Image (cartoon, rainbow, N blue to C red; front, side, top):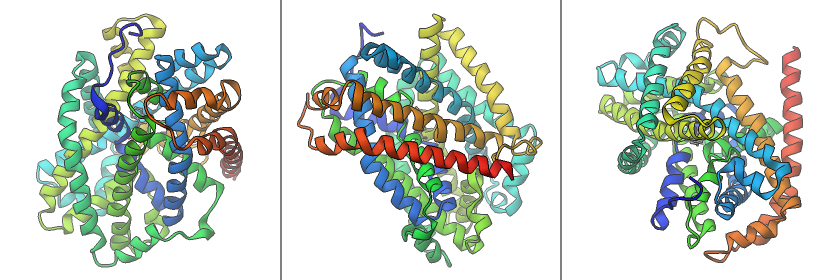
Length: 451
Ligand code: TRP
């Protein structure tokens, strides 16, 4: 692959491909429930600050490493400095942890699409619909297998290009629909309290955990700190401005997340008065709240069906990109053929995905530090491994190859304006903040575990 690297065509090709990987369940499902749980406005503010500082610098850095070396993550670090090869390897483990549980949530989306298509829209708005569904042993696993199977078929037959074409039409429609639903949500009776909660930061709720959650979400949503952007960068042409592309991807990715929050959080207040329990619903929040919104909306059954279809597409483009990554790592490292590698990854995902699904039902007694099995995988990848990979990436660039080496690459196609900001973040701000936050939040979790 390395000798014959095809490039993205045109300037927009790169941005679209990277945005396709970035926009997914992270934006629509994960961002709103974290924002609801971690104080609304304060979470949004911290997230936005991190996005324009850490997120910007790290994404520029990863793309530049990829384009400079022309290699995917594992080899890119190795080719720059052998001692740092482990960072690439650590990053490569992350998509394999995410994919199984991502597909469990993808299965829930598929279930809701099916429910709306088969006339169950009104029923899905009841309080017990989701909890009833999720507690069943077999049904959620069945939908997980449907979603995982779709993903695996696309990767097995190599028809990603077809899916990408469809998703190029679906994405703008998803944006429009999200805006429509968000506008409707904020006008429901009692939603204004929620708009305030979401937009006005309450500084008394600021804590290290908020920052860690926002940072993990930033990495997750922008597909950072796991080698993905390095691989994308390795396909990027030299005449494209990395800085501009990163701005475009960030605006798109953050914009959709912001809208998803506006669609869900005010509705939580409208339907439950915003009590802490409703806000802290975690992974189930979107599935409990949105059907209520659709149920109260004129034409809601149709709009809801269309919405879940579009979300399914956004989720599939991400899961395909995740599985593609894992399969190519397995092929590179073990020298297996495409079919064998696909099958192995598929089986692996089923083995990890089934417990994640059961953790909401028959296995809900299993929890570590208050986290369900799915939340545990999510925590390990997003709040532990990604910050560690990000930390070592910053140390590597800041002190081993030096920021200048990366800035040179960033300046190849176009001037790079944010040089000083980039250097300061990579060398000082990011490493110090990541260490402080990691340590304090892990202590926090251990503290909870002891109780
Ligand atoms: N960014 C994706 C989302 O928001 C999820 C994701 C994380 C991802 N890592 C990835 C997608 C790697 C593709 C590749 O849903």
